[in-house]
Image 1 (cartoon, one colour):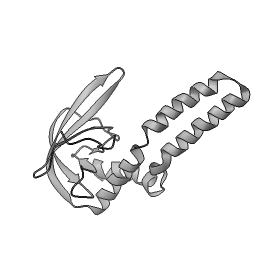
Image 2 (cartoon, one colour; image 1 turned 45 degrees about the horizontal axis):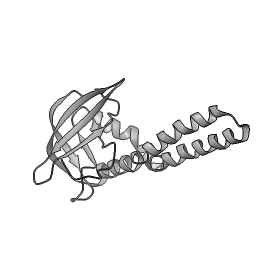
Image 3 (spheres, helix red, strand yellow; image 1 turned 45 degrees about the vertical axis):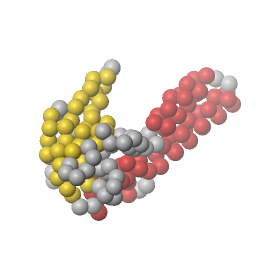
Image 4 (cartoon, helix red, strand yellow; image 1 turned 180 degrees about the vertical axis):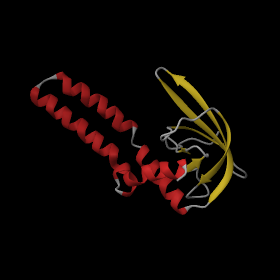
Length: 159
């Protein structure tokens, strides 16, 4: 099994079960529960955890639908070829990975991604691209070493 197929297989159970699409709701429910505990016991510690968990829940609300779209595109959409330039930025204690995807007759798209069980190296690579709708950005991009799924919804124009 190729690294791309393995990474898709690792993500598939959370998408098929529906957990990926709704995980942010469960996270926010935990935050609300901790808020209630904080009020009942009139203690700030659960409130601090609730605040942190709420921020994580709000920050992850795009993740599930994007994973779902990537798996559906892999299963249903035809592939096209293109090119990606991967760049890395070191922010504080972690690396941020960015992809600039180029393909014929399409606008270029730049987005942040989180590698799934692989470590990207900065450079330019040939890619396979899956897209559910022709007029949208890429749902899934893959190089030989791994998959690149956008971390956030593309709310702005392509770069």
